[in-house]
Image 1: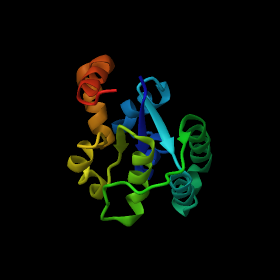
Image 2: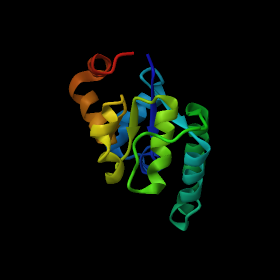
Image 3: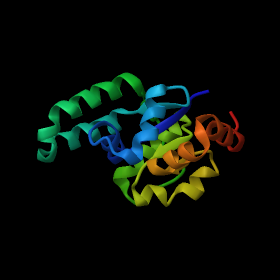
Image 4: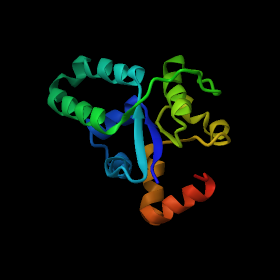
Length: 157
């Protein structure tokens, strides 16, 4: 059974532009599509596009463009109509919480401290806010099948 997952911009960059080893297992799970189904919104896509237009990314243009095209093909689009019950102290990051809430996502992957600080409150409502390395550690230690059983045991379908 696939669970929806929101990916914030920095994690997106780690996955599709920088190929960060700490995000490797998360990338595999997203590509597989069996356990995690990524979701996106016009606002999250707009932020990615805006970041990719920065001069820093000019030398990586082809890789970034290919990554964005891949993202568009694997991530389910959604337009959040309501605001999440959790408020991020960084208003720019609220869009990720709103998307997670609108899609009933099980996971929000981020390295942002303001979002990670909301984990305890959000997990009560079924949203796990995790750094990609934490997902990777669970897979590396337990294997995909066991990790999936553990998550499903905590978060019923």
